[in-house]
Image 1 (cartoon, one colour):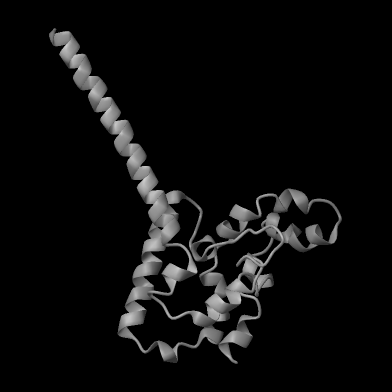
Image 2 (cartoon, helix red, strand yellow):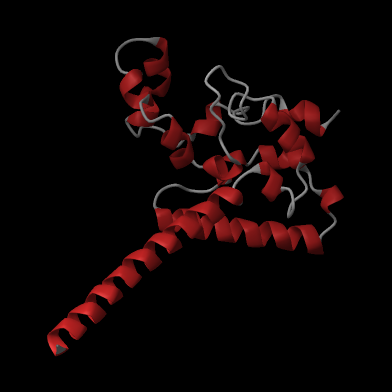
Length: 176
């Protein structure tokens, strides 16, 4: 009788742990997804020009495949899940602080674009463009352009060359 009761407690505890872990994982994934796109991001930082140009870009959904990148797909590191969550939290706190403590009309977005390598992460680019290195092998034009990057012969980032990625013609939205 005691053995059966102990086994019931152990089994119940194991089920509780598994269900708790599953509910936690689903909750975290749902929260991350809900807080990763432009509708959420604009609540803490002034970015209408960026949103408008994003929706006109291939990464914002204007492509034949219907693929849409979120803000955090590009603007938060994907090196590890922990780095992603920490980067997302740091970015959110920073943007919230700026939104409510500074005059956001004085932000020089055009000057910030010159520092795009600081806040666009190659790990995000490579999350979606997983086959880029393999697809650019050989002597084709794409490989010649990307060879130094994949061989580690340059410090350039993806946005060093692809400056309009994610925000088509952003400068026209910043300076209408």
